[in-house]
Length: 225
Image 1: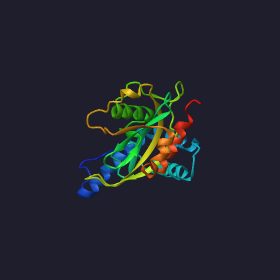
Image 2: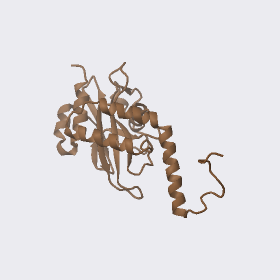
Image 3: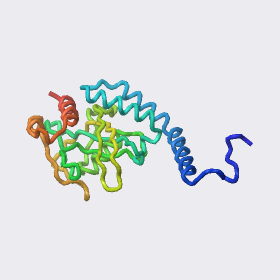
Image 4: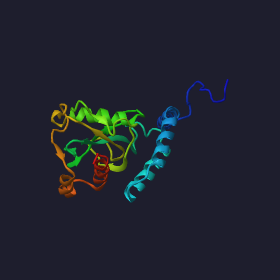
């Protein structure tokens, strides 16, 4: 029998707490095995990204360190934090972007949500955007190109109920619609939306944080002149 094979009785000399720790280590080993290739791809993409400012550079390094250190970082149950996927939605014809007011955080934000044990963050961003807005024709922008994040941001989410304070490691994309009038948020989603020009974004002042302004500047720069 292999020296690494389990033997009966299982863990006879371990306390209940030690058994839980052993089970946790086993779960992390499984995460590490299952997501090793995906984590390597994510780290390579982060390394290749050219940050727009010092804040994004610091966040990319922080994200890379956390992804390397935590095998379960692709799971929303990871205690330190997890990867989220969001998107700046643009209407190319009107040169506008769509924001919604987040009720719990009390800020204007782009749409997005958690990656649910998945490694295709572009698909996660598109799924979350469709659920939150109801826009039927949302597609990654620019058309014909392989979807890729244009921005990265790490930010702290405060404790809420039983959920502890944790980090969101946000992969940010650009989506486009040609039917802004079709906005129809799903039941339970935020209903407070605004279509904004670049001037409108500037006028919102501190209601939009610096990292979102950076994302929107990049998105507006991708519109045809």
